Image 1 (cartoon, rainbow, N blue to C red):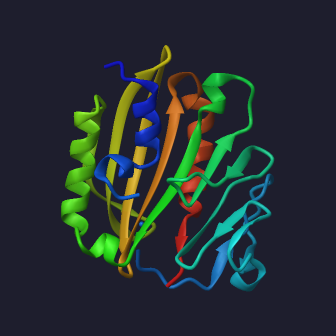
Image 2 (cartoon, helix red, strand yellow):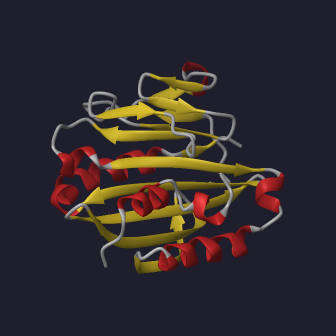
Image 3 (cartoon, rainbow, N blue to C red):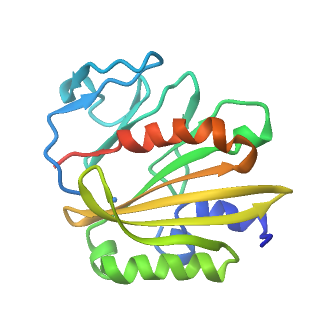
Length: 201
């Protein structure tokens, strides 16, 4: 089903604008060192930025996440904590991106996790997205809710994968968006970024 580009942007920002609102329990001591050579060595949390972005890592009080800065451009969007966008002049590739959005404290608790994920999924359907799959799954040893949708915009077809992660009085949504033309090459890269997401508890 074809939808307007504006709705694609809304979905990529985790459908939270539609909801009217602007993700986990693992003890973390070290962060995986991920670089262009996929080094398996670890880096201490003390070596990461206290907050914000540095050297491919983004960190706030709840989590950190990593993307190869030679391949992925970091930015902060009004509706997201952080965004990583593929560095490319080809539109099929430059539209590939991953967003992280957090809802904390009363904003989250007033709705609750179960009601929230139901609302997000309904908003995708109401906005013209095809929900390919949805339901509970496991992510980095945690029970999460995952939604995969399909849509088309500007003559491109896209897949949007979103993982909703509850924990420590907050809900974090990690989502990536990728075109069919770039999927085979870039989806493994986006999965690496997603897998680097780590809660700090």
